[in-house]
Length: 252
Image (cartoon, rainbow, N blue to C red; front, side, top):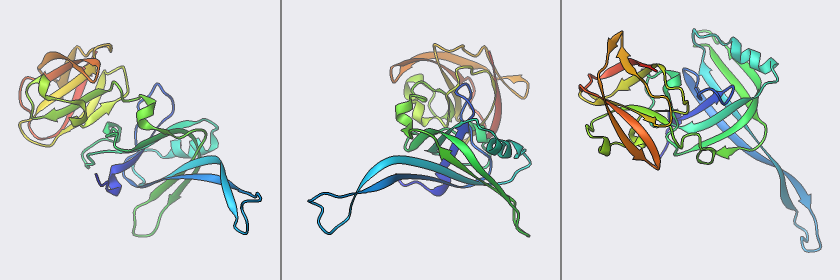
């Protein structure tokens, strides 16, 4: 699978009680992993230098267009000594109608670690958009996203053609969240007119008691299914949904 540049995104969160989110209008992200080296010599090395790797390190840089959202938090994080958790991961579907908080890794590529924000630069050139770039310096091990277990039992949602619960799987859903408290408002996009809305919540979590959009109830039928060893309660809209962006509220 070939990845395009727009499919690689930087996620972060301040604590493990929050969901990972990304910043709007990202234009570039870069993950660099390096290792210190030391020259070693022995009777066997002869005339050629030989080296060994010592301590390893990593850093992430990201650039974005400055939006009407406040950038003060980014500047404050440079002055703060607090850590953030950073994830550089691939996503399968990048669209302008998606909210930054609605992206989720597709698990094809992802690295996670703890970092400090060491630089925030705001640049404005005449006739161009204002850009914001930031640098995050890794502190400790950089782990593979699969090894973290964050998405072993995700809360998922998406619009699918399938009408039967046995025909769905979690990777086919556009939206995946690590949160256990599923209540709240979400912006979910239906790419094709006539797809059903599916919402799957691990059965161990507090289940939604209702679904609504723009103040109107969205009737849903409830199903149960075990997916990848986890018991899920899945909800499917009774009606097929028109294409477009839908703001859905889950009441718990």
